[in-house]
Length: 143
Image 1 (cartoon, rainbow, N blue to C red):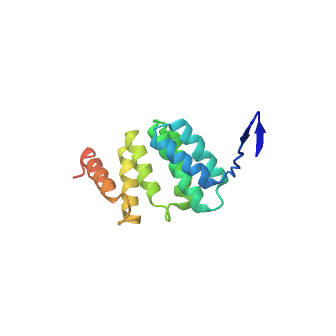
Image 2 (image 1 turned 30 degrees about the vertical axis):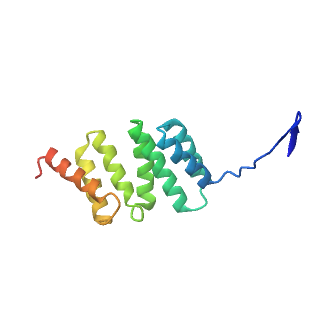
Image 3 (image 1 turned 90 degrees about the vertical axis):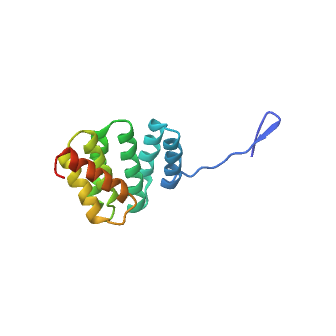
């Protein structure tokens, strides 16, 4: 402890880790503070000590960009994830399908959402992906 005037100040040591910044990024995201969330997730990616940490932080960063309408940035991050880890992190295909749907590239969106459903038929986003697939097929008159 150090003294400031007559008061003692406690110094708290913070060791920055990927997990530390990831948690801060989640908190900022939940408060809809996307600029802060992007900074925290970017830092989490750079401090990742393994592939899993990097994948999750990168994915959250891509989702932040998606929420702010920066689809090209989100696509770039997710393209890299798909290239390097797509078969082990199938959710990237679902998130990428959403980017293309927002950009009105419905054909590409359908390809990606179907890839997600093929790779992870019991995944966390199956209901949402199936709904997106159905909507895309209707829009493309494939029903």
